[in-house]
Image 1 (cartoon, rainbow, N blue to C red):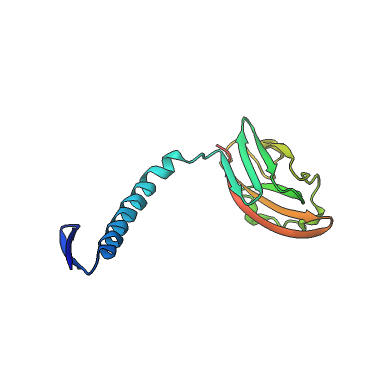
Image 2: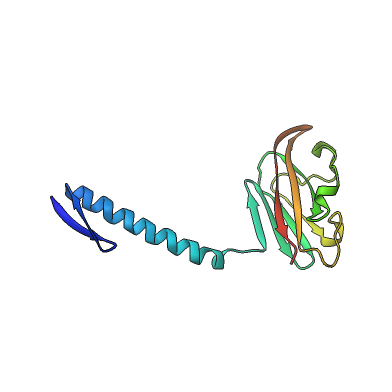
Length: 144
């Protein structure tokens, strides 16, 4: 048996593997805490990615990237405070799907409900295989 001190407390460990395991647990905790405090400062608030869909905030516009190799990306943006007030048509009817591997630029003025005071838009998307919906989702995109 070996003794190991972790966080000022002695613990009895039955094998060298147990000592390594306890040391790893302590190291993982320290790493997790470091990530909690460091990660937010490293993230890019101008880019949001979900699966094969990426939206990048640019000067006065949102740039959509369809990273899918197979499906078209139907999309629409709705200003954050306007979103609860409207009903969207089925995504198969949305205009101008982005072809696979392509990008599309949407000026802020084309965001439904956009005003100069808008700070966030909701991005609704769906992947289409012809007229069939393969995947869909939504996420927030910062406008400022």
